[in-house]
Length: 183
Image (tube, rainbow, N blue to C red):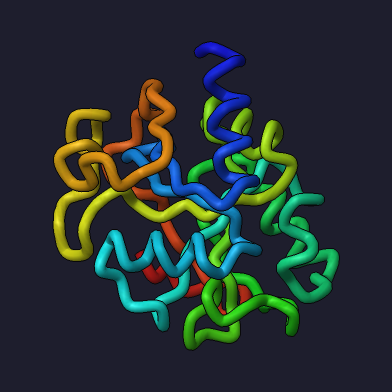
């Protein structure tokens, strides 16, 4: 992977753009979670209702800390057992989390990714980023740059090409409070 393309993708996110990039199982769409206009544009591209919320991925725990309420030592240990890795956790959202991220929920979906390119993208961007599957709602997620282009043509600002992580299906989603697996 070209460091130049990685820097271009990160700059695009910081400037309010929407990008596609590889994740553990499928291509994801990403943007700056603090930028309401970017998130709402991304949701419109996908035809995804805003009340569903979106997942954020990060390179490390420091990048997700502003998004969550304080955790107990036991809760933190539980996260540390699966992160970095392909588990997305529903965590109690900080009161400052905007509605365009959490939707109608009081939890926020977060993952510290182990996917090398997605992790490098978060590191280069300097923050957590939105990570939702690159597809139109109710359609199969894109597993290639060609599929991303079929769905979105020229409506994305950047496509960061690279290998997927090898999972057969999107990451598992678990609720840290209830222990329930929701996907």
